[in-house]
Length: 109
Length: 135
Length: 238
Image (spheres, rainbow over the protein chains, first blue to last red):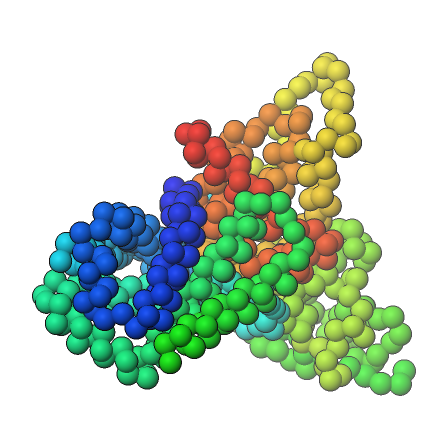
């Protein structure tokens, strides 16, 4: 892992500490209140706050997860660094696209 | 016996040889080492889970009905159990990550073993709390 | 002599096998005493390394019952398990023969981490005055007693997993020099310890801290380097 990746990894981690806190609280609330899909979508659709919150979360998670996966692969699989980089980008982009699509689905819908 | 040659610099490092690896098994079962490994494995598990989580949300794109069907499906006890596992993993990974951030960025404390144990207990209680909520 | 210990010892080089011997147990016997007895009485061609026998030189480290240890200061009675002792060369290093590991990768990393002092003044300059209580002096003091035994290097998972990683000892050394007011090589050093296989490759397993025979804390030194590297990176200096 280069220093640049290290910094991105740690900064995305710090950013996600409060985001995860809010996410967990939301999960507890939604499951505690037994919210239906319609009820959840009613709360999220058109919401600038949730749209922004989860877009940011998806970006941070994509960065963090991709760099983390790269570290694990580099340590444990013996992949050469270039291949590990390729997998990192592929995985990060997949997370980003799928994640933003998911956010769009519940916010725009 | 495995042998790895990796030397981007050319000079210096000759070869890295792991022939005697099995000799070192034994020292590793310490609380801090476990904390680090649990942190890493929970991270991998979350990385595997995330794409499916996003695809699940994407169901709402097709129709609200599809998402509702999926949400209903989460009433299944097995799925509930898996959900609890994910909340547990996320909490575990969060607390393990806080351990790393604290070690790396704040003044050094010698009470980290206690902290590592507390992190696992914290994660477990969050997961149990969640289980109590959904059951 | 009332009892004996069953000692299993690595014989051979990179390829070899463990072989067992019976060694008489003595009071206050160290692992090094035991290996020396074996070499003098049973296995004259046994290769191992030692010099001072009192924990100063750092040359006698071996893997004892699964853990890297300095053998001259390790009492057999403290580590013997069910009357047996398994002794091998240090892990994470090539084996030369029997219990002698090739330390060159370890010292190569020391050089790559720029672990030698770079003077910033000449012999005609006045003697540097370093206040004993200053924070930098104290940080250096905490980490300075390293004897280069290689125990931390042999114990480190990051060394095992990442061939480029500089390792705990080299990074710990770099930290002492970064805190040396007289040193003039710190820009290059910080670059070296945050480049390929640098401090950021440490996963904070803290095994180095646990096993260092001198009770040093390389993990803490590495955390210090990480902070320096992070702030230099954010300022655009790295």
